[in-house]
Image 1 (cartoon, rainbow, N blue to C red):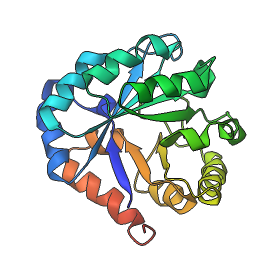
Image 2 (cartoon, helix red, strand yellow; image 1 turned 120 degrees about the vertical axis):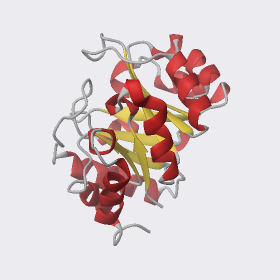
Image 3 (cartoon, rainbow, N blue to C red; image 1 turned 135 degrees about the horizontal axis):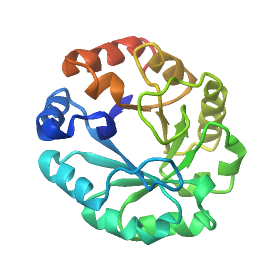
Length: 221
């Protein structure tokens, strides 16, 4: 079943609880939290306190995407704040396996993120150890960017690797997901779609969610 994970990066912080409860009513199960450090990416966003607050407001699955250098220093804090899934960037990690072990030791699920220009084969040695692969379909750092079509082939390649090994690993895509691009990534094998501007940036949030769901309805299994 395909999951939509609205990104709170695009939410109106002055109406955050209101908007979060709207998406919850639409049977959304996951919320995506983009954590940026101003170093690995040129932006600053949320800390563990935001994860804790959103978890308290909604009780939903907290999908925390760490776009930071040296994430091992903050992984424990996000786990304690209520993160259910933590993804780290292969480009930011010196000892990837150790970071995955740290996340799991804290009771959270672990994922690995690849930037648009990072090849899929870098996952080969860690794929059996993780719960999720996050493919960035924009360069990380800002919301509202346009989808990069060349990532479709990488999504398909990773999907095939997961199937060949018969793994229970989510394949998530983040960046430029709309009713136009969602069917493309679902067809390529993605089953978690991060949607920011196309959900929280719309006046009618329930209708925005419905449009995305309708776009891939005939493709989901």
